[in-house]
Image (cartoon, rainbow, N blue to C red):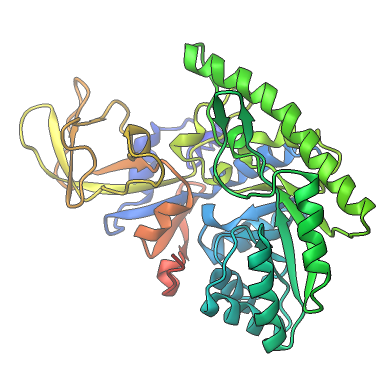
Length: 407
């Protein structure tokens, strides 16, 4: 790993990474969540290098901290707009001064729509996602009652339905050009709605690890290659059909951290989306074409020594969403070689660990873990302790620290 990847180890003859983080965070109350700004900014540089010059819309569910969003946007003009996970989150972010907010997931919740229309009345630009005519009807009525014109975007399904295998996730029923043109026509006849853009997120390309020579990863690489050709053509054809039908699209959004190289091959795409690659959780360790460096992590304290070769830490049970299994557990990271105990895993109030030979950790010592996913870690902590150049430089409140819980 290069010097900048070490974050706090970026100068001179660096001590081991564990010792450096432990020294930098001495005196901070545990448990805590930390963010290495040197590593964060290196990950940003790597994303920009992979983007091919396209602007990047940051995915807020992977960040969940206003301070971190501002820190990143101040470092590159290529970061343009935000892709939000909640309508009320978008309305709140508009109140924090952010603009060009696209909500990636549809909502018909009245409180959500009231918050968005109020934010638009106050001058905010928020685009809501639709993939069904019934959503269009509901949004149009709320916009009419609020006296606003509500921008909406169409969510194009980008899964590949191969014979005998559904390769993707179950999102939008808009499967191609004909579906999108019909939905756009339903939007166009509503005076309080405006078609603003299209999103086509190929999750099976962006979100599946494919490094290594195991039979499963070889199959995944083959499926990805086949899916890229098919889904890029679907998005290109859909955009062309919408424009031929007289519809204007301000943006065509595609991709995620794991698919920049293939998404940018689609000439219809005007912007990319990314977030997880900035924090670099464990689910982003196994990609063949690119790498990130760990930037976000958490620390828990050793509080017990149940037997030789083991310690038990307080807390640590920060399990990620998705299909239940070992891949969703947090991973002990530093000191290297620590391992979860199979029949306990990461627990609500305690997490036992097996230590590698020759390692002894005193009571009170921190153990650093990496979360399986990016922004979900912020739901467990009120702040991210930010490190740079070997020292704590700031404390960024998370959404939770701001008193916000959007799901």
